[in-house]
Length: 340
Image 1: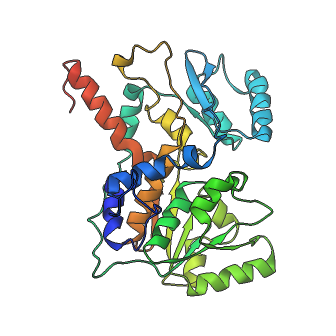
Image 2 (image 1 turned 45 degrees about the vertical axis):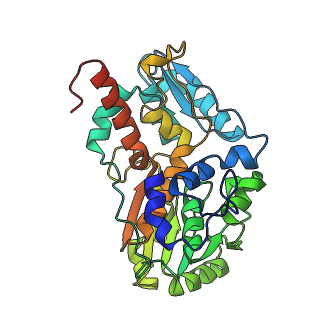
């Protein structure tokens, strides 16, 4: 993650840290800031929940970031499986069906299982560090994102000098509102508006923001904004110079492009939940206690926003794919295989 902070650091007017860890007066390094951001839930939310354990499915397992309503729907899906699937469900088949039900369920994969998929979906490569002389900081940012990745991206842009307006409707609030420490950490200095984009008057106010805005950031699934009447063509009609930054769970041209998932679900699907051979673990998969793919993707999204043109899409998967590749190459090298 520090490599993304390195891109932003030359144009950051302030950081999240009042004083560097351990005291002192110097500005935090990119590595220090990265660790600070990654540890935010543990510092700010004393009752941060334990990760949900893998749900065994045949010889595999799935991960679900499920609300109470989602959990009830997932139980109905499992009960209905004999009428949907053929034979006992596999983790991949059950996750795919759950996604058709719009449930954030992903399969756990080993790193070896994830490698062929990673090879098809390119990882993110950081752009050069921003220049303090000619930064491409968007002056006005409209933030439609929720939870961690998108709000972190816009919070970082705010610290580079952008003015951020967050749309957070009471009818469908940001899920982190129930985590006031995290919500304030990510959104406390932004202008926040309660706009329901299904309401005509609220749409007019939103379109006024778009008319004068420079960058729109959103983390919906790909179908949401077009269903609300704001596809790329319609957004260009409102403001031809408006740039758009989309944050998704999976790459936009992959078979999972429209899947719903959060950081722990991406952690499971990309093979990072498999303990290393040296761990001598008694369990096959280890869930992530913190949604670190969101943090890495949020920092990456902010870095790309400095040079984004038109519509740029960032995925959590592509942001953490280099971790899986590096670990897998190290393991194959140790076992005497050719890592290339």
